Amino acid sequence: MSLFDWFANRRKSDSVDHPGQEREIADGLWTKCEACGVLAYTKDLQANQMVCLDCGHHMRVFSDERIQQLIDPGTWLPLDRDVRPVDPLGFFDRKSYSDRIVEAQTKSGLVDAVQTGLGDLDSLPIALGVMDFRFMGGSMGSVVGEKLTRAIERATAERRAMIIICASGGARMQEGMLSLMQMAKISGALEHHREAGCLYIPVLTHPTTGGVTASFAMLGDIIIAEPKALIGFAGRRVIEQTLREKLPDNFQTAEYLQQNGFVDAIVPRTQLKSTLARLVRLHHGSNQSRITSAIVGHEARFHTDRLDDRLPDVHTNSHHLDRPNVDGVIATPS
Ligand SMILES: [Zn+2]
Image (cartoon, rainbow, N blue to C red; front, side, top):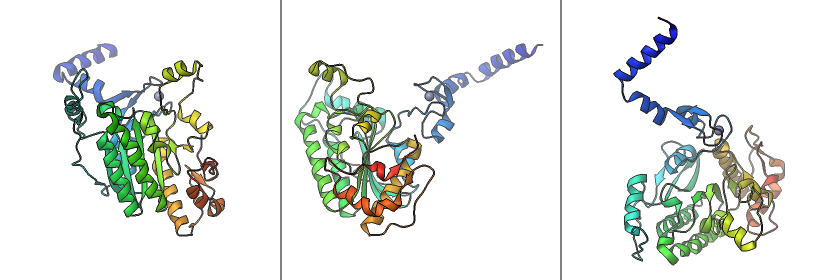
């Protein structure tokens, strides 16, 4: 028997013995990168936080994985899990909004499009909000607004840094004006958080659009984005038709926004936790007028000699147009 025949026979007998095995392999063990097409062992990809090992493409991850990636094990305390969406307008398009809610809840296992909670990030107490694109495109309705507002208020009361991982198609049209009101409500809570001298960092992931971009995603003291994330307000086609102008190819990417001053730093997901930890730690230190030891890591290098002067300014002036750029504070390798 040739080697080829031996393999052919073996494959045949395997598939007879285990009819589900091939399907299982196709379904879960391997994942194909949608950017470069390379097949990777899913466990390796997960260990690399779903960033392609070949081309660096950031695959979509959802709220549970995000929390796991950022929060120290055993420290996560979820907030307001009982806040549930209702259908205040009795909205109906092709389906009723009530049916859409039930469908999204069944599919995702979530109550609505955000998870909030308290936890430790590298032993630093923070409040975290994580939007989930699986739930009706991460749209912002009353529940997203209410849960984020309560989390920010809790962060203000306990003087914690607030971090929000944004991923959203915008306001939830099925709730009409009620969804638009959330923009003002969250922004108001963030203003109190800022007045209390606390740090707020939004992390813009793919995609962050519409009313989320037009409110809390852009109100950070330091605004971080993931590489190549789509970030914008209106869609490209709408803008091109309105302006009657062709937009550049990289328009509405994280990189384009950084060039134009809307985003402070683009941080790869694999370095996100360590970068956030350093920023929170530095802010905490500056609040107490002490920056401990020079922090120089191989992932993100902070110029701590200049920080003593600059960090209080970064925080105080963060909402001014001529605010100092975070480039002077952190440098991430390209
Ligand atoms: Zn790839």
